[in-house]
Image (tube, rainbow, N blue to C red; front, side):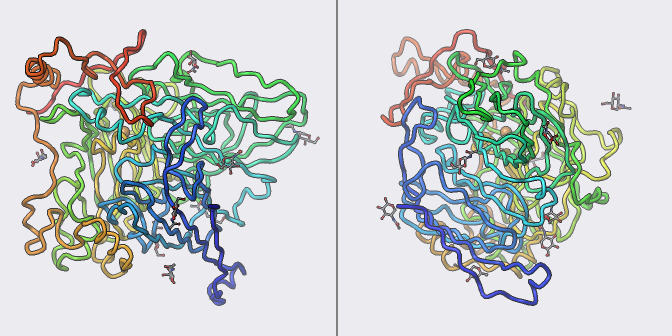
Length: 629
Ligand SMILES: *[C@@H]1O[C@H](CO)[C@@H](O)[C@H](O)[C@H]1NC(C)=O
Ligand SMILES: *[C@@H]1O[C@H](CO)[C@@H](O)[C@H](O)[C@H]1NC(C)=O
Ligand SMILES: *[C@@H]1O[C@H](CO)[C@@H](O)[C@H](O)[C@H]1NC(C)=O
Ligand SMILES: *[C@@H]1O[C@H](CO)[C@@H](O)[C@H](O)[C@H]1NC(C)=O
Ligand SMILES: *[C@@H]1O[C@H](CO)[C@@H](O)[C@H](O)[C@H]1NC(C)=O
Ligand SMILES: *[C@@H]1O[C@H](CO)[C@@H](O)[C@H](O)[C@H]1NC(C)=O
Ligand SMILES: *[C@@H]1O[C@H](CO)[C@@H](O)[C@H](O)[C@H]1NC(C)=O
Ligand SMILES: *[C@@H]1O[C@H](CO)[C@@H](O)[C@H](O)[C@H]1NC(C)=O
Ligand SMILES: *[C@@H]1O[C@H](CO)[C@@H](O)[C@H](O)[C@H]1NC(C)=O
Ligand SMILES: [Cu+2]
């Protein structure tokens, strides 16, 4: 079955559109989502999420102002949903996509319709947002064309390129090993490859002396990538849907979920082809298997008969590459620094273990645990005088209620030795501070004993025109400070976009202007039908209590803390001694404890999960000691 795209010219509303004489139209996509088989790295066939029988998935394309309708039929054997990453969903928070936040998970066999107006520019993407489902290939670009973009006169042709990490095993087979007693350090699963536009070793055919626009999107689940083109400079003109003042550079760093749009003017000569080089950020990997190809060459092809030489790497380690600092970009609209915040939220990013020995991720001491009733449905069903009381949304959704039009500042201190790409739904935020800054010192706090926290009385001056984006990387043991106006009533997640960390609970819920949500939002019948098919309640507090919204008894909660004095290593060793004794095993290979990681051999199709393989010469990650008691 082919992708069906229906474009219906709607009866124009003349008085609204006279200004630019454009015709807002409805763009409809029918997505029949089923499993298909793909082998994008040429190393292993695997099951991936296909749409209308195809993978790579169709790119969604609209023009600014269009109404986008996506009808999804879930033909998978598990629940799913679609989030349209970076779309503000202004007045349509119910179309945002995350399960248990703004909708119910769509069960197998069920249909859901997403329908919203796109009034933004630029480069976005869509992906599944129910448990971890997008690493199985359920992700692709979403482009908003803007005929008024200031750089259009410098564009003769455009290309879209996705970057991604790639796993050979199904997420559902990786997850129980990742979140397990055998992996107490929370070592993230190591991908088997890195894809360039869902393939490898491709050539992009270009003509000499021509102006191109390249939209780059990291649709990966975990690993950031550096991007450069040998012997070429290019100009950044957009990040995450925000036009920037032109910034010439020759190297960018794109984390999971980030987008960069660049202008590239090709050379006048056609004697040579140039490597397009992508380098995976190896600082994110706890261990580097000897057969994992971290850097890749694709080609800017001027002449298909000329040589296609592999890139010669400039550096030994990816961390020696010094990319453009995104925090130093200036938004094209020069929106000024927002005033002092009405609300300041200060949080720490923490990785730690709970009583079951699993590795969890926390904002302060909360590891996000989804509620029984999706948070938006609690907003809609609670009594009017209770919707602004954060308690009803449950302690473990980490709810924070924002007042309409407040200036909100989030200060995030990273107590973890790894970097994380943080994403806010419903907004692009101003990036007003980050330490250490992107550049040669970005990783310098990774090995220090104590993290450096933001000091409100001692920091560098905030930029006059801060860049805005929707996904920002926090450096190891450093901090970031962001601001936005709560001018978009809705329920919005703020979370790490490393899907494994989201799975570990690195998320919180902003309930923005709940009174205005109730006035403006009407959840369509179809979304209620989805809940009913999923067996998920649409009324009640986080615990599903419909009588007394302040009674949270039975709310889903994170496991208990480890008892005082126990380190995860200790508790795991103890458990294993008992288990080994019970099972009469002579020896057990323990994840994380022996600096091991997931087996690289594919077992996804067969469905068996095989044990870890030891990697000679790999770099172990330091063990997390239990900090709490
Ligand atoms: C979806 O695709 C599957 C497999 O091709 C097919 O059996 C099914 O009828 C399709 N469903 C819809 C609603 O199009
Ligand atoms: C989409 O939403 C618009 C505006 O609310 C409405 O007019 C239209 O009927 C909806 N379309 C579908 C297919 O639900
Ligand atoms: C979106 O595009 C319009 C017209 O090109 C431009 O004026 C506006 O500044 C853009 N918005 C952002 C956030 O870049
Ligand atoms: C990347 O892949 C998409 C579809 O998978 C395709 O439409 C697009 O043209 C490709 N980009 C390039 C530069 O070839
Ligand atoms: C290519 O030639 C044109 C016309 O001579 C010139 O304007 C342009 O700067 C040249 N481009 C490059 C990249 O050298
Ligand atoms: C590129 O990959 C090779 C082999 O995987 C590795 O030895 C080299 O260090 C990598 N270079 C960078 C910059 O990561
Ligand atoms: C988190 O810390 C706060 C303040 O110390 C405390 O009231 C709360 O019970 C803690 N929550 C959890 C889940 O530990
Ligand atoms: C202010 O911050 C700088 C840079 O982090 C630090 O070197 C200095 O000691 C701090 N000064 C005070 C008074 O804390
Ligand atoms: C949402 O729309 C309102 C009204 O048009 C506008 O004031 C506000 O800035 C918008 N918010 C976002 C995040 O787009
Ligand atoms: Cu993370």
